Image 1 (spheres, rainbow, N blue to C red):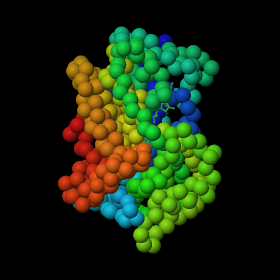
Image 2 (image 1 turned 180 degrees about the vertical axis):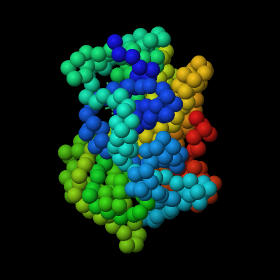
Image 3 (image 1 turned 90 degrees about the vertical axis):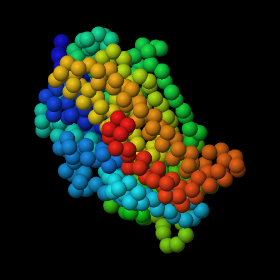
Length: 394
Ligand SMILES: Cc1cc2nc3c(=O)[nH]c(=O)nc-3n(C[C@H](O)[C@H](O)[C@H](O)COP(=O)(O)OP(=O)(O)OC[C@H]3O[C@@H](n4cnc5c(N)ncnc54)[C@H](O)[C@@H]3O)c2cc1C
């Protein structure tokens, strides 16, 4: 039987940042990850860090490369009816910005720092299962390097994403799930070409939503709205570029920079919340507890916000024996989670083609006009997009 204070399942942003914030308070943890290090470091996912999330990476000592290579953006474009409308987020929020830096780059920095600091971090573990999670000594059973092992912990942090084992380990009826599936998905590509626009472009087109984002000055990230049951082999490179060019068309001299497609995939769009985010000594963190549609660029940021709350609560538990912050972990996080669900759902309905209802389409267009002409409405978008300050809502 191995022992640690906090057993962390999953080496995504949640698990790696939590381990680091715990280590900085002298709290020991072990991270168990089912995938290989290479897989974790190459998985292309989110790419936008909120203002406070980027600052938190600095505070925990892994922000150096992000500050050097990340792209600080002060605004985004909303594009509809062939016109661009810039939302000057920094000006509307007193200087708050976003940083474009790929999630897999964040992961590389965190893994390198964890290994340099001697953090217990095991990749390629299998057959993970949780036991006695409603006791003071929960255990994690897993297979690693051919051996079956048992890790006894004070607390387990379920940082294993939406499809992990932690949430399903909670007995039926102990948590309530809230879910919404959207009638569309996102086809996303990474193109080895320079972004045509230096800032993100969110386009509403009658054929559906499109987004031009980026991962670096040499790599463009592009998305189009597709039917929920679509498959990637239905799409040739030419079809993808043609659809992107149509939906992102704008008056004036602008066109996408076509390059080799180096990664492609279709991601379903869903919203999900588990309430509470805790059962006994198991705490759910990040995607294990909630999923947001990616329109508001919030998934990784929300995970980081949970981690911040849990790390502080565990600090109070170990230094003062104070259980209260752990007892209120779920309620504290859920205030922000529901606000981010609200914003992500709003951005999604603002920009996607949802059915063929002409009335709904007119209301959507009116809302786009309002957001791009009213300072109050633009400010509401901006302050949520750069992220409400940590501490304001958890
Ligand atoms: C395909 C895809 C594209 C996305 N694109 C965007 C985007 O463009 N913008 C955005 O904001 N968000 C995006 N997201 C969401 C964002 O990436 C997540 O919100 C973020 O990764 C959450 O971090 P996490 O650490 O909670 O979970 P994850 O990053 O999912 O990490 C969970 C970890 O647990 C591991 N794991 C799973 N099961 C087990 C097990 N049984 N045992 C041990 N380890 C296990 C996984 O391998 C993984 O490493 C995307 C998500 C996906 C899946």
